[in-house]
Image (cartoon, rainbow, N blue to C red; front, side, top):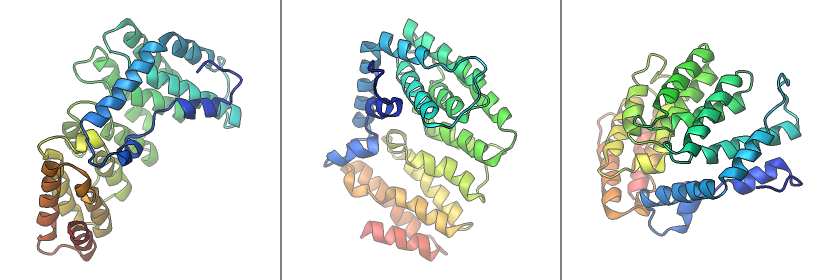
Length: 281
């Protein structure tokens, strides 16, 4: 963290915790509630223990005023390490002095990085993860509106806007996603736009696999809808249920129920049928 002699990109990669997909491979039965909570707790504990060092690191890596955007290795490493530090700082409790300071830093970076998507998206991700009852709720709402407006209809940027929200680590994510598919810029017939919301949400371990299976039912309905439009995309969406055997009995049964329901749909495409049948075998 404090060894400036090391390559910034290497430092950033060393500081990032393993993703949930990697951690889950070590579990005989994946626990989509406690595993993300444990990872979140470790990240917050590290941020609390190293808060001063993270603040100093973040500030030391600020670009000089008026510096042009650059894609050379040194600048890429600087941005990567600085955004890694910001992510840790934004995991601090929202109501704490450190948490408020982190949100202020994220907002300042978001506002100042219109010419650098890497920095803007990193700050946006930090702000979008804040819950509605957080002291940072206003900053979150402002960032969501500003990012969309600045996108100016650019398809790739709007896809990032959708995906960042669909994968945010915050309570009520399923409701957020239901609202996103009602947005005027969302389209069920655009594969990339569809993936930026529906596929992205299905990759969110804790929220897609939330107790009760509401997200499973929502995805099942989405697959039924998409299969009539684009069977190949629908079949890939159905793959989200393929690991049902890796989860506990209740979740596994709920996922199998969706697979069976989709498989029995009249007029179902061959692509989606084969994925469901293979997953149930």
